[in-house]
Length: 236
Figure (tube, rainbow, N blue to C red):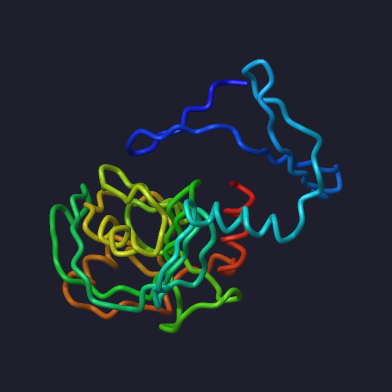
């Protein structure tokens, strides 16, 4: 086993106190035992274990959650939260965007109308999707392609040089949104971003000139919000 290095602010002496052993069957069943530790010849030795109780497991999970998960008031736009996964929606709005592209848009910035959106961040990626209805989405809500430059076909955002938050928590929602909208949109990463003549290039030229967003032109992804999140769980 490699040495375990624990970083902590200040000088803290840590000694091995107990261990949890997890057993897993091929069918996915999990069994856990808790072992006390005795120092023998200056080396820690695990003593015989006892089955861990639900109460003991809950205490352990609660202690771990204090360090690994968010505790606080829930942001009113969050639609899903789990360790290292966060999804929230953004109602339709008018917001400033910046372009630096080689097509007809060129280098240009301005206020534009945006469709309702869903952002999903996890350890494996940073995604964005559009919605047809300007209401809070649920698990069965259908996802649509977000017609933005720098977004891949699967919805993953190409961050480029945008600075994104180091942590995934409700407190980082504004920072993720700002990192996306304040980035420079440079080129389409998807050949089909919107159902309309002229594609995404014509769409954003019109939006920068004050046009309403054509919600009915969004491209369906044949996935629900729950489908997208389940796929992320498989990747993690």
